[in-house]
Length: 253
Image 1: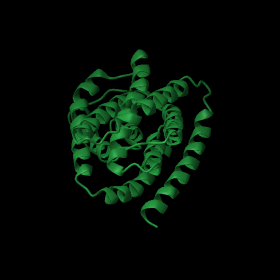
Image 2 (image 1 turned 30 degrees about the horizontal axis):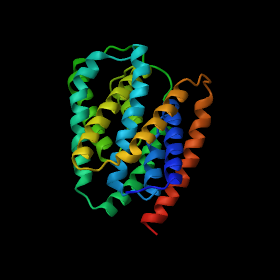
Image 3 (image 1 turned 90 degrees about the horizontal axis):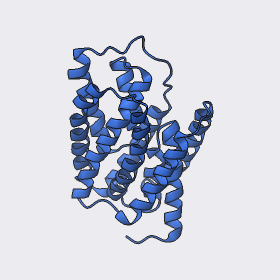
Image 4 (image 1 turned 45 degrees about the vertical axis):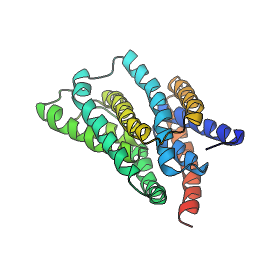
């Protein structure tokens, strides 16, 4: 596919804004995926291209958490294989479906992603002692199921993981968020492998979009204004509604 410079600029701006939003409030995929579809990129190609760019963007956030030592290494060691496997199978599944059907499925799933992103995540648990049941059942199931969702669709994955760890294992919120970022990165990689094997990644635009997304993540993560998250969420809703409306017009009208 060939793209006019205006389209690449539009997508780069969308990926920058998405990276900025994602580092503060989550839900960047609610901007990037609809933007790719709006630019006329077929659904499977849009999913694959989005995975490459978002993998690099998420890696920026993961690095920040690693430097601040917020990860639980045993949780990561147990859950990573389930996260990668689930996302790989999810991506293989979406690749089997008709392109136009995938477009309609994405539109149906987008509101689920924004609901997960907007659920309040405040406070912490009383302690952070995980049980054997948490390690050997809950964490693998959470990673496998949400990994599949990430490979099949994607937006809202980080929020689903954070909520899953927070509510089902009573993990402290800051560590739930940190671990979720790592698993989100791993599921992105597992999904990306499936899309690469199927030839569903547009490398020509992936690099500039990845750089724009990483830049947005960098500046967003440096934003020190605590009350900024509320403003970002409002902006996310407005952008989401506009993009979703355009996609409904394209695939349903």
